[in-house]
Each structure stands twice: as C-alpha cells, then as structure tokens.
Image (cartoon, helix red, strand yellow):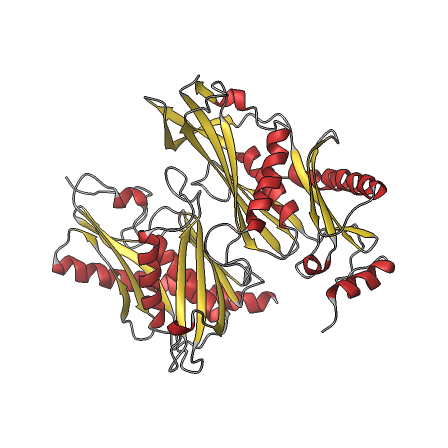
Length: 260
Length: 234
C-alpha cells in the first residue's frame, strides 16, 4: 500500500496535492445556507467540497451560574454521526468530537462573541442559554473549518423565541430579535506535513499529516483561541507563518458568510 | 362541531409539499434526503458489511439494522438531549420490519446493512419520512430489493378521514383524532408498517388505509423520480 504521508510529501515538494490543489487552496465549491431547520432558533448548512456540516441553535431558559448572576451562557456540542462516515460509531461523544467542540467553543467564548450580559432575563434567576449543536452529515475532512463556519452562520441566523408568562419560552412564536453578537469568530486549521504547511485537508490527507494548529480568528485579525494537535512540534517561525495563513484564510471564509 | 378545513389548507387526500434527493452523502454506499412539509430526514446506508458482535450474525441471510435519530434541534420545543430514547428504539424497530419486507440479503450471510436516518426538523410523520428516505437510500446503495416501500400517515381528525397529518392535526382538540402511520409495498399493495394511536372505528380505519394507499402513489413517484435523477445528473 502506498504511504499516504510519503505521497503527500512528494507532491508538496512540487507545491501540489493529490486532488490537484495548491497547498493553500480550499476545495470548491464552498457554500453556506441558513434557515435549513425551522424547529431550530437558528440553523446553517455548510459545504466545503464534499464535507457537509449542519449547525442548529436552540435557546433555553435556565438559571444563571452563581458566579455570573447577570449573564446567560452558551454550550457547544458536536455529533460525529455514523451517517457521515463509516468510521464513526453510535454512542457517547468520541475524543475527536469533544476536542472539536472545545476548540470552536473556546474561540467564540474567549472572544466574547456572544454578549452574554444581554442574555440575562431576571438577574440571579433566569437567563437564556445558547446551545449550538454541530452535526457532521458527510465527513470528507476539515470538519474544524466547516463546523466553525456553520456555528457562526447559525448564530447569525438565530432569533429568540417569545417568552410566555413566567418567562417560559414559547417555541412556536419566534421574535425578530437576533442573538447579541459582538464579533465574528472563525476557526482556521493549518496543517503541517514534513516542512510543508497546507489548509483544508480531505479525508485522506487527515490520515497523513504530522501536526496542526487551529486558530480562531476575529474579523479584525486578532486571535481568540489556539489549539495545537498532532505529534509533531513547531518552530516559532512556523507558528508565525501558520497564524498569518490562518488570518488570511479566515478572511477568505468570512467572504462566504457575507454572501448569504 | 366538525373539522371543516385543514390547518394548512390542503385537500383531505392531499400530501404536504414533498421533496426528495438521492446520493447526497458521498461517504455512504447509498443515501437520500426526504422531506414532507416541515419533516425532513437524511439517510445513509452502509453495507453489506461484517456484523459485530458476532452472535448477532445469521448464517442464512444478511440483516438490516435501522438507527432512527432526531437531531438535538429538530423538536418542536426544547432541545433534545442526544443519545437516543425508548421512542427512537421503537421507531428503529418498526422501520426495520417495514424495510425487511422488500430487502433480500440472502446472498450476504452473516452481513449487516446499517441504515442511519437523522432528522434535522420534525413536524409530524417522522417515521414515515424516515422510511421513505431509507427505502431510497437502500435502492441507491444497490441493495437487492424485491419492491419499493413508501410510507405516510393517515388518520381521522374529528369527522374527517385525512392523509399525511401535520402536527396541528395530531394535536387537534376539537374532537377525536387517530394517527395511523402506514407503509405500503408498491407492487403488492401490502401493508408493511401499521401503527395507530387514538380513536377510530373499523370502517373508518379501512377507509383511511385505502385513501392512504392512493395518496401513496405520489410518494412512490417522488422517490422513483429522485432515484432516476441522480443518474441523469451524472
């Protein structure tokens, strides 16, 4: 059997990849569709090449955490469905799903992209909880960027349900009030094989890389979260190049959000 | 009091706006998307492949295994915790029985065909929509099938017999309601799924099933057309 990594290295030396792309090219087409589930308060379907990810936002009324009585909260969950890839099994979330959820969660949370103070209904008693479920429909690689894009698009698409007496949400009645977003955060993951850097791996390339760095990038180019993955180590110069590349690609992906 | 006009203005024997697509999940051996009104299902089929744990294997024939799953944001109310529940287990079981009626896996002893249906949005009739997607995905995967299966709910809302109930009709409070999901094998017209909740007379039940079988033709045509379209596009 040909070694995937070996093959990737040989092609990378020529600035190429097995599917004909350059190292810094995303697959095409990239599409973002919103409002694809009417039962969700906000939803999106993102496609990058053959990778398909769905995001659904539900809003629940909950008790604020004791240390932040004037704030609401958020939660991100990832479901790697057995529907989306033969290697996934039913059952509790795998470590891959947990890491993916955490990386996207931290980007949005640490940048304070959701203004949680505006999610307070009655201080100390009732607040909104924003729950974002990210679902793989077809995993052909790079779920990170696709899921991050879907999360942001679904948040942007979401509106609050109206409140009934006693501050109980009436899910049948949607208001036209959007979720208070302060920033637009997109995670971009840069991969490394040998000395070469590349983005948007397909399924096969995800089997052969040495290291990766996920960078959550705000619209102003600042960074909200980082996550290194893979066995390989990075030099400081590599990190600089990886962050530059991530910022540049986040700008490219952000254009796709604008065109909705 | 009587039920005068359907909540969405449809005729008594009219199905909700319906849409189907085949081959939407490239990783799967076969796949489909099916939507009736505000109920939608994605389905992926994987197999025939070796069945584990081994004690479940049948040396005479392969088996199918259904996995019905409502996505966390697909409910009418609060978020649904992922991880399945008794309702999902039961629906998976009745789906399996309905599809087994047409699937022939005698050439694949000890094997399994896994059928995953995930629903992003549900209103009513979700098991029927899941079966319609699954039957298409099986056909798309090239699994040996003797016939096609189509499903929809029929029922009674107060004094009217109706086809393809929406949620408002299931929850109608002005009179008795019966909700009857059925699946029909296309050529033999036999019933492969039959469940009922509510209140109905035997005569009304038979009338409802007959009306459902007629409306089912449209479901079947939509399934068939979508399966053919996949190969026209290519």
